[in-house]
Length: 210
Image 1 (tube, helix red, strand yellow):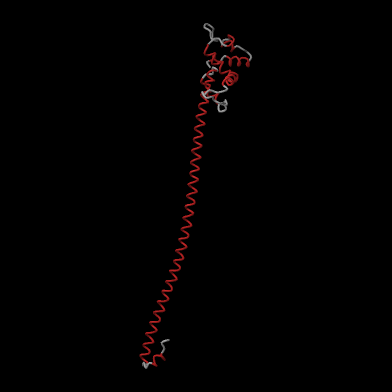
Image 2 (spheres, rainbow, N blue to C red):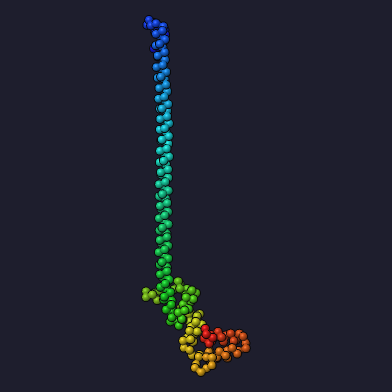
């Protein structure tokens, strides 16, 4: 039942008292309305904040999953990269070890062929060292064939070394020293034909200090 002037008057309340009661009642009602409105606003704000919090929590959870997935993927890539680098390094070291073993075996053939050690690097550079096969003793399986090829392909190096070592073309008492075919340095320089003279020089380099 609403509190009205008519209702209060029926109770025998005087007019000035009715005004006071109505005024006090209005203030109470207004205060209650204000409080209700405030509570309603707070409830709406709380609901909004709860929804925002829920949204933020969801975004954080999604971001966390993304970060974890990226970290896992990156970890996998780093592992694969490190494994590849290790395998590549291991393979390279093994290749170098095999190469060094083959070079040592090849050098022995060069030595057997009479090649001076100073020519080893040059000959190895142009030889198929990687293509040779070693037996269980570390020797090249095709050593005889390679020895024959070396003597044919690098004969100049063998001849020069043998000439110097034996010194057979520089007998005592021969002016200027003897060379191939018993020629001396002066005799070679007297050859008129330039091509023949150069050929004689090349064949007797030891007479010219080479």
